[in-house]
Image (cartoon, rainbow, N blue to C red):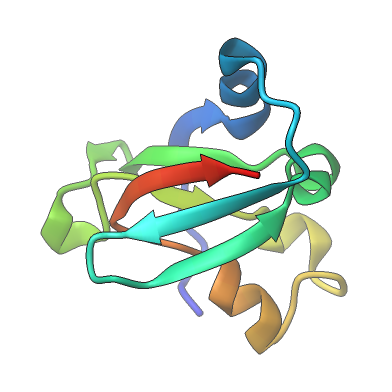
Length: 99
């Protein structure tokens, strides 16, 4: 999908705790109209982050920013391979709805 890169951001679990979320799913909305629903269990299992830096540089819209949801594919190659996981990598995030 992409070469191995370093992304920096904050843990989705920290955000959910901060806002007092008790939902079971997250609907990610993107600037281009794409949206995808992920289970909160993915947040816990994989330690997902919302990245705002890629290779030490702030992610701009033309560089998949301003925020992207990152799964640790390199650490879970067997579980996170294939097109189902590709769909979960969301870029240009504009809104997150917890359900």
